[in-house]
Image (cartoon, rainbow, N blue to C red; front, side, top):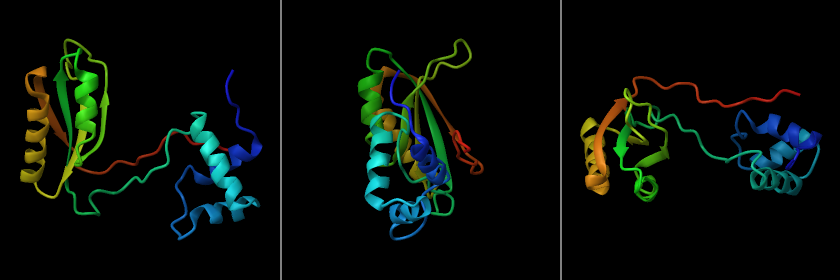
Length: 161
């Protein structure tokens, strides 16, 4: 059936699901909160990652606060036989914050590759889109960009004890 988190794992998830403490030693702070040592927090977090209970630990920046006011989700209609290879290359570009493949919803939505780009000017984002377009080449049949107008609250599933 797979890995099943125990009571302490659940407490650790609840303690961290809203974000890590903004301190020089966030894992030590969580350990103190839970009454365990920092090494146990780190071991359990790694175990939760390894077993797919949590997918990642990462920063969720507010791009607007950082000055990146032009944020565009680029969407691409890429040939299925090369999308995995090309999608990996797009995702490795330094200006792409996330990139993923999604199913098409024909006839209304033919796009199957999504890549989020961020810039301080429209010209900067347009240049980034040109780089992606050149990388995809003839494998891309069409594309579009959807610019965000405001930041949305970014949260996932939340557990409660």
